[in-house]
Image 1 (cartoon, one colour):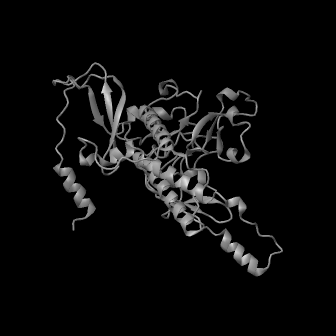
Image 2: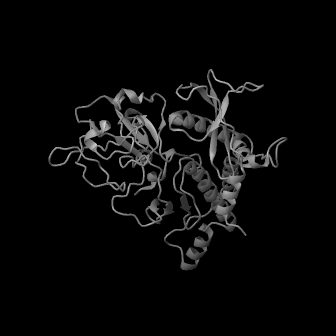
Image 3: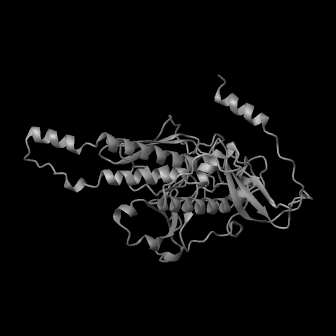
Length: 391
């Protein structure tokens, strides 16, 4: 039997490439209207249908859309599109658990995954399990509690009563699998390594995560937190072959990372390992979206897709934690702390538990700075990634 890799290779070689588009001029920049559709192939790779302004094909229909993979130039539009579709699927799952089985009329068989995504299969499965678990726990308050005065036999019976039934354990196992599947869909779209969720001894999943939005390497911006124009505060470099000489790297002009001689220096070596040369209060300035260096540049590290598989697990007495599934070299960077980007003042009044998931972006703040409007925090209570489980 051929291996999966061979099957994919045979599949890819059998696909006919699309005909080249006539863009009239390679030098002209075309303006797009926005994303109008999406498709997910059998390997869970997503493509977006983009509608263009002032361009159309020279065909009978005069179509003006093209399909493309994730693009750096459209990251914000893609995130907005993905978030809107996710919200729609969540609403659909709460309204009805009915599933459309089988192919739609005129639906190609290879659009099966797209069909499942559009019809909220994962969201409905999670909602179904969640409703089932509520039914199982419907009379939970009627179970008698064990007191210190109980006999050994009574305690033994109580332990049995407190243990989850096989039916409940199966529901929780399925919830765990569904949650892991949903998160890994978002992880694959970000190009990152997989994440496993190892359920607790009683098969519970991490609490409060039924509607959690997984964001591997981007922020979700709260209402009132705008996305500024990067050209207003970032400087790009012209290092087309990669940033090897920091003195000629324009984007590092504002960096405070200097050696004992006062010369600017990178935070990472050529193997993308952090060099621990950062003074207290100094930020790492990586290359940005305005830079011309490639993704392999030694100064693009935290922004790169995570290449280390992670595992969320139950620690026992200390709740849930996270660890890498492989041994890491000292200085290996895994990613960033993501979540909902909020104004600092909006964190006031939140519960102590909620605030424990908030990280203040306060590198440039001083004790005399009282401007709450320009103070920001990252809230990973309802949005975030694996880093929210760091103990």
